[in-house]
Image 1: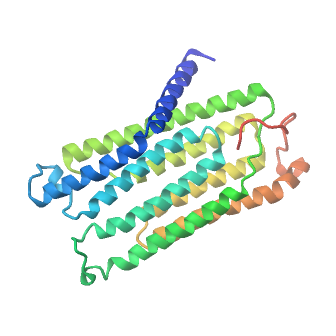
Image 2: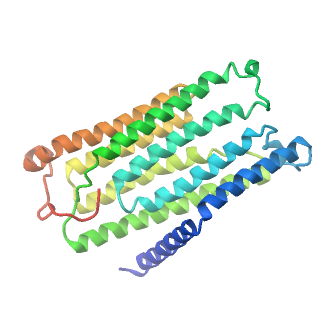
Length: 303
């Protein structure tokens, strides 16, 4: 291992250990409680006209803002957790992306209510109700489909030797480290824009755009260890599912939920075809194009 790869490995493991210690100490839940209560305090200060600019321009007077802020913080932490989890399984990473999008839809339901004050009056909610129902039921459908998706996973290995297994895992750690750097850069830019310009940057739109490039990079990395058509198609299919999620994030109400459900169903379809016909293609190398590399039949890193 060269000096640069050694540095990346040490940096990744330091971050991972810090993340795990923080979760075990209860920091995950405590931070979300702090965000929720802090957002409530900001709303009350805004209602009394005590917030300075530019903060006053981005904090609404609706108390539902606190729920939205807590959900947003939770989703940011889930994104960070996804980056650490991608080292274990490419398939689970694709599922985690769908999980995050379903939670984004739930958050949008609360965002709709953010425009209204308490107590809620029905006459002010007639328009957003359809949007709330669309986002909520879209999230529910994705929740069910993701469970179906996980139940189909077989996690078949793609390489055999311990040396190649270690090398593949190391490569995924390096990709995960790049993803963490990208997430941090997006977060810092969003915080800077909010603090200096009062502009709210769409953090999750930017993160899912980054996911697309990371997914493609994982596809290319996996080809280094096993250029099998089945694995190429499967991992590329998961990247297409991420593209559909990214389109859903930019879509208008109703279409965003429909695209999210379509992305989840597409991931299920890719998994079903891979599980059903993959073994047949493995037995017939001339069908798969590249076939199976010599010695690539035993376990290594999970797909």
